[in-house]
Length: 351
Image 1 (tube, rainbow, N blue to C red):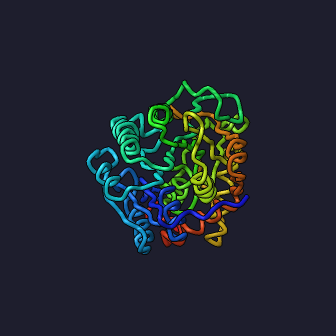
Image 2 (cartoon, rainbow, N blue to C red):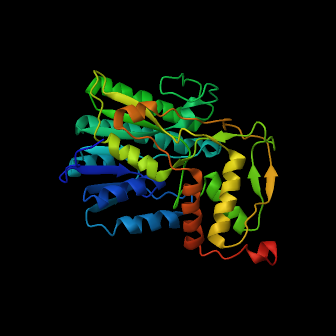
Image 3 (cartoon, one colour):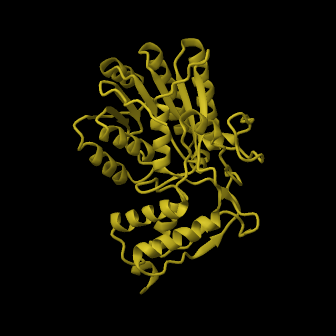
């Protein structure tokens, strides 16, 4: 399917630009010669050095403008829209993490609800061609019907994080109804890849291994009824977003929601074994994790599995990067970025 070139005169506002997906999307748009305004508050939810490393890459582009700010700062958001008048807005700024939302609920309300409200208000007063925003596969809760389809019941979230993402969809629908803001919500499914989020399991497994520590697997050691996850490589996410930019909803209520997932759930243990092989390849020697099994954590769900039919029908694209390929790219990056040669001898002894 052929798509028109994105007009070079259009200004793109990407929030969460120092974050994982925000970085890759911004970089892709910048490489296409587009003008990107990036907003991020560089919070310390995880290692800020990784965020600064991403930003340093983006700042190499002359067509990139960075604003260090929080989307829950209403004045900053309004001033940004007033000054730059973005026509495409991609809101990827949010407090992420299911488990962290149980420990620290305040930041989820501040960023995911109040911050998103200010984005919507700005799009209302400074009209945009398309607002795309991050939702999450977590809105499906403990749904047992698979694959998850956009028309499924999503009114039983099992974490505050999921509740904020479902709220975003409702808020966006309301603003689309009242003010005809073309908006699209994207339900991401377990995104992974190089320069990813250290709070994600695959990244944490690598950290634990090189620290000489066991990894914790929250499936009770039940291999027959293991957790399933629809692991989605970050490049597939970016391709989906980039194509959807061309397709703002045109219905009477111009609001749509799409899954972006790999449509191929893997057992968690299969994913772990693949990561061991990929790290072994990157290190040139065998890597085997020490494993500890624990009960599933509060707020976790047993399976995620995306139907991507709606996305494919709209833009002719279906994520499909196999985990062997995606995890190898992550492992190669990790070994190079952190310059790891062996397990930490202070904690593990000689290797």
